[in-house]
Image (tube, rainbow, N blue to C red; front, side, top):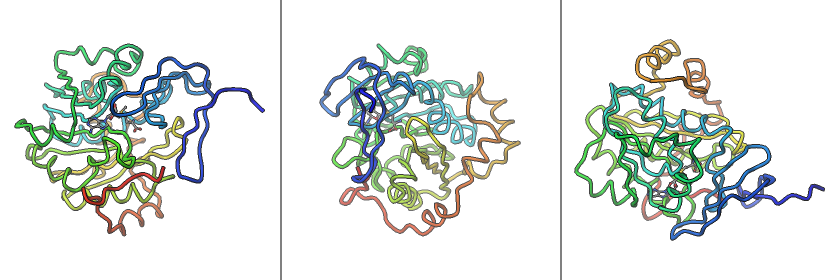
Length: 302
Ligand code: SAM
């Protein structure tokens, strides 16, 4: 009926979401993945990797604020932050809003994504790659965590979904989470994006349960992301404290004290919403027994 070109994104082998493309801005097959930058009619400029929308200019703040701030405000004045993945630079942008942060190390495996971000995604990174607190490393996050001698207050896993045999799949395993725990300072914490509770609830709950096997306090949040046409899941883990223990009033106070500038999505009221998990998802999280391992790593269904 409509004669557009379409981006078709499979969520499971049985369903897809299609976005009409206004124009293709750039496209490249990197050593690791297929990287595509388009303008979508509804969501504007959007980064797509291996057929999956990573973020769109119109709603990326929902994902990036939910990923970064609940963890960082829960820790006591985090100074050294490690981001694995995070290609667009928007996670870095949010991390650098924290007054206490002295150093933000970002490790992304794909130089093509970083080139795209620097050239075309200013709205996302807003110059964060040039911030003197930033150290950008092109490399495998898995290898970096194994080899580094540095310790971090927070580790933020802003990775592509665990697609079977993709470069991020092993960064959702119990072995890897144990390695991350080893590079956290005492009272440090980790957060990971944890795929879609709408389309891959099994993957979300397996990530949650895998982290529960490594850390004392594990909590989950969910936020609706229009560009993904789905709820999105995030899991926070620490041996110190959980963001879910904060009240709305505490969140508003902490945001005022610790963050420079205005947030668009996250505040006390939003905090209560994203940590209010509906019963069927809570039951699934609590009853999950599977653990993602290097031998049998979890993967999204499509
Ligand atoms: N918001 C996103 C989503 O919905 O999946 C994730 C954003 S970000 C673009 C994902 C980044 O993870 C990509 O830039 C990709 O190159 C990076 N990545 C994948 N595997 C990696 C690995 N093993 N080490 C470091 N970065 C990795």
